[in-house]
Length: 498
Image (cartoon, rainbow, N blue to C red; front, side):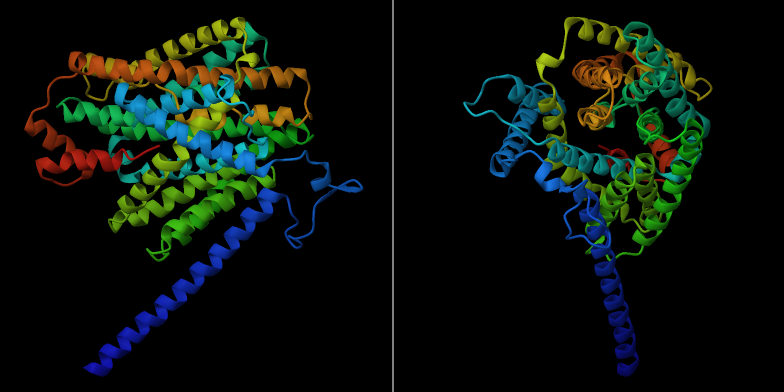
């Protein structure tokens, strides 16, 4: 008996050592890919300084005061956290305070020494935050829940986003004269709904006893909406900023990037299923960063974003069966709220200087936003027809589809950064500035307005839940009967999004 127990323990110990060794090997590989991608080094000679012509890129780069830049980043982070907390106390939207913190530090003479963050630093930090957004979005996609909701969820995720993007593209072309591709890129940036605003609002009204019949649909569709908008934005970006390839090759390349991203994400996600729980978060983050920055280094950005989403979705499918996905969601939620969210919104606000804006740009930009949101709201109302909801509930869902914030903050400066490298003409610079400015305007306007509309209209448009209705809704959402007190925890678990 003792010998048999000892043999089993020995097998378990050997298996654990093998798993730990494999985790270490994969983490080392992912870290190496991140280093090579971020610093532009050769894969086989990482310590050799990359050259451009007859000189090294290090000699060509402008001087960077690393101490001052580090202090600026930390200062932005701390002020963003502080103003985010103040804003949360006042309005319930911490991200709005974080954004205003960055804008204030960039435009107000608060210090005798100018604050500065190198473009490369800001880009890497915001992209890292974007990776966390993608991971949380992928984790939140529950395949079984999506199957149960069927057509209503898919219609709500795809139709309003598509129509708003097309309407915004045409309106921007008429008002600003941008190309249709720039208009579509702007459209898909603006079309992404903000789970950072929608999900907490849904939790709040559920706590007040409203909306149990619509919460699951809205939360699931919000995640899918973001995945769809991000993917099509990445495709538009890849086509616009292609590296001199022919149009035919660029068109063929787009679906290949999508397929490649799905395959790569599926493989890495399957590997992440079986990592040790103690090292799971580290490997999950490092593999995602390696895929995202590695694909960016190879100029296949859309494949990188999609691979991160797919890897999280595939891994979460296994973890959810074992009841382990909530642990990962909680860890990423903590990282997001304490570090990545204030840094993302603080840096995007810091990028916005008033000298870049004009009254014409602001007023026409607001007009584009109003037209796009109006089209989105109308289509969202129609998209949930046939779902068993009353007309008042469908109106509430349509109004809940207004807020924009997280994806806009992550994607807004991407085109602007490309044009600042001096490789593109004036039309590209103007188009990139329009995309950036309207994305920031959308956060400043639709996030607080949308949150207020949800809070005000919930008691007017949604009926008060009964205990039986709450139980029925939870059973439909989870596929099993749970106690009354667990409904809120289920909603929170399903709604732990960026």
